[in-house]
Amino acid sequence: VGSLGRYAYEKDVNGLVVTGCNLTNTLNGVRIKSWQASPVTISARNITFVHIIVENVANPIIIDQKYCPFKTSCDDS
Image (cartoon, rainbow, N blue to C red; front, side, top):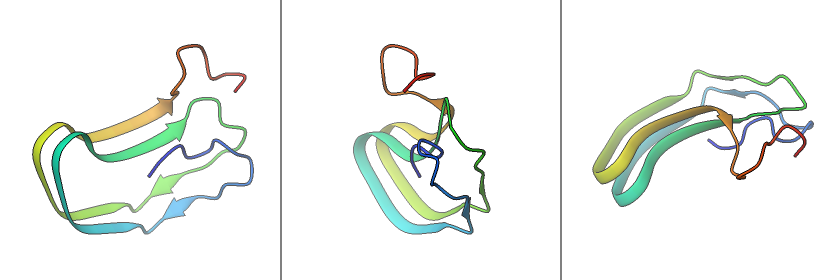
């Protein structure tokens, strides 16, 4: 679930279920990201991950509440 709140037209994420995934030899596993300088108030709730298998995954679970992919600040991006 990525970059929530980057754009003003985005809506809340509610009731998402991710099931039956195998993640192998990767940097990141399951991930939730919300944008650092969001132009809108947005929420992510009732997100469920079921039967997720990770093998040789550096970061199995990541929750980024202030995601910014740039080397400089995202405040104006």
